[in-house]
Length: 232
Image 1 (cartoon, rainbow, N blue to C red):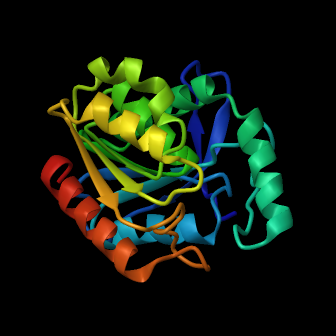
Image 2 (image 1 turned 30 degrees about the vertical axis):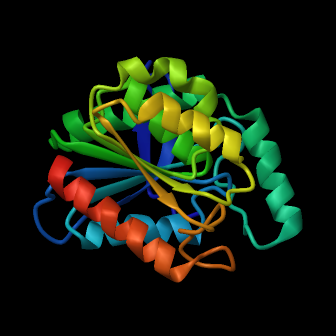
């Protein structure tokens, strides 16, 4: 895992690793990249680097640091996929959102950047939704977030823009869950949901067999425009 920075927890009693990439010139804002269940692997590292290349300070925190710092898995390797699920099942999402808030504070206070966006994938997509409801992040994007339909009671707290990418053939987010998300969020002026007909979970992966080139490019274009409008 290419982590290169330590960020203080909210209580200041510990630190956690993150991969931070700076742009060549003055940052136009900051983007937090939240991993899938596979850690800060090469795909997440590349997404972080791409945001820096687009002019943002980019930060990918190690979400699983409380269990084991530095883990990374290959989603195309079945054994590693199962190991990653085990880490996700043991993850403390409440503490994880506090870590997101700690990253936001670090960016604003230590890096001097007021505008912060967050992009999350899979498990990170759920965290993007939670961050939109529980933190003051300026804009959030969730790709194929799992379990959002179980957290719709928090939607009233979303006060900043949230963009959700939902593949309609997602094996981890069934049709009933997608229907509930639309019913609970379509009326929220802060939330935009884009459906991707026939695509499956992981369609926007950077590498590997799950990536759908056309779908990924469309979602990435929409995300870039969303952050340009709401972050800088």
